Length: 436
Image (cartoon, rainbow, N blue to C red; front, top):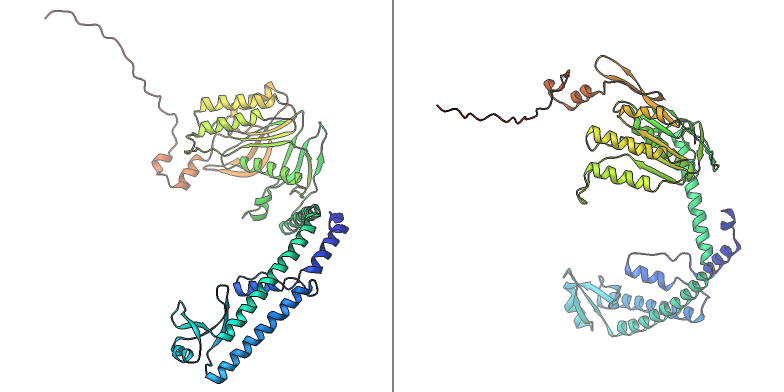
């Protein structure tokens, strides 16, 4: 990066620009000022004809100023002023009330302005000076364009230098942004150790969600993340709002930050070089494509399974929510088994289907994790801490969330057992053939 910024070719480009371009020439929104900047955008001494044309233009504008002063004194037109626009060039502007006086003293080409409060006009001497100025302006712009075109052509031959400098400046800006973010965020930030070996493990000690850690309203609970090729499937269970989704998002963001070269919010980080990162977290339908929630889940799960590769990170959050419990559990089990059969793929699978914990009895590379909670009489106390095991807590804060949402009390009363579905039974009654 430093070599690109100090390259001799870059110094040569800067020298070419400094020899021709006037530093004080800047862009201006006003047309008259923009024209003035263009007329003097090339430094004096670069082209002799350019200097002569500028001198002639300056002398002509000075004669216009002297002509204006003479009209102020001789005709008492104190409100007469000199103006310029691209259509008429240099011309006079005076109040509409003085039009008759101006016509009596040789002013011609009277035109009312849009406001009708003033008129634009000229005189024979001013018209002649205006023609001369237009010629000089055209000659100056033509010569300036030729000089700038020559400069651009020389720079184009070294355009690769500009690309290298742009990349270096962008990289420097990114590094400064990373450093400023880490400095302002506070807390422990570690330099991740990137491992390209096939046996590399994903280890994050006391990791925190980078966005919630910086902008969250509450103190964040740090958690560990651990996955190895021999234990590459983590099944995460826990009640609603216990922090499963946050844990998955934290893992993905920390891994991405490590890959772009930023310090990560953790006390220690060992991250393997990942080829892909897949997430199947949100669930929603899509009216535009006529896709239901379950169809969207199936489509995303199919995409993940078709594009799996070595050293991939897969994050799945509650797969199968868009259909019945039986179908959803079957889908989650099938997808989990497919992911378990892919080597060198680190998978974090959050679910409410507790029977998926039986995968640990069938596959040695399955780890079961749970979100720690402390039950109480009416609600759960979330600890937001990940620990080993399976969450068998039956209370999923249903009553508490219903109360928070304003549900009627009679709807919040727990039922011991839901009523069995009513099935209509069709029985064939024997026909009565007796005679009465």
